[in-house]
Image (tube, rainbow, N blue to C red):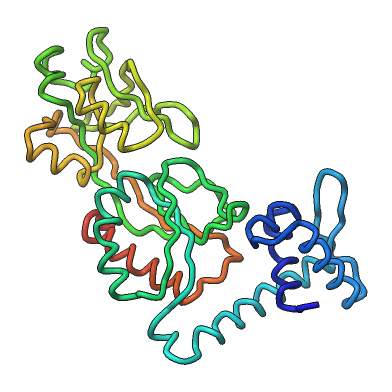
Length: 304
């Protein structure tokens, strides 16, 4: 039995709650993972996991052992990365998930600079606006806009997206230019709805001007769950958009979008980098997070 493989297999079963999921994330067969955990239990002479046909639960001894295993695996990772020039040249594979507009407009264009600085880091980049199961999908970290509601994650607030309201010239020519956000509730005006991953439905936007406070809803003919498609619908004249400044800026400059309600303000959207609390922040993950923080700071600094 390879004790390192066995400990890694046991830790992943605890984190995913499943031998099958653990095997998938470790690129092993389910039988191999099962055998490794059984051999580990035989060596330790304790039961680490309670297995039923439907679920896997960690025992009291297993929970205590898991906490030690996580620290030991982290120390081993640090020891490996400290050898040779690894401390100055982080290496290895990272799985990261980021919002699609952020990837297209900010992160991916900046990747050549990251690769030049850290040529030994291999990025597996998931690009989506969906909720990601970090442990179940073996993702090292995610970049997300909005409030992080999953209390099981470590979330670092890294920036704030300033929001504004926009529409295409074609839409305004056809429907007229609203002078007040409440006009978006009128029957002839339309918004483009964004289906938030947390709720699966469009949410109202809080807006204020002096003593006026309202939550803008609006009616939509199309709602989407992906940021680039959401922007494309607005550019096509399908309705009014609420956009982060970095997404709207180039299209406003090109005359493809018009800013609305500029005397109104909205709360910024917080940006977070989140990762599982038991996921060791390795050198390669730490330098990636620091790079993303600097990248967001340049485009959407934290509002003080």
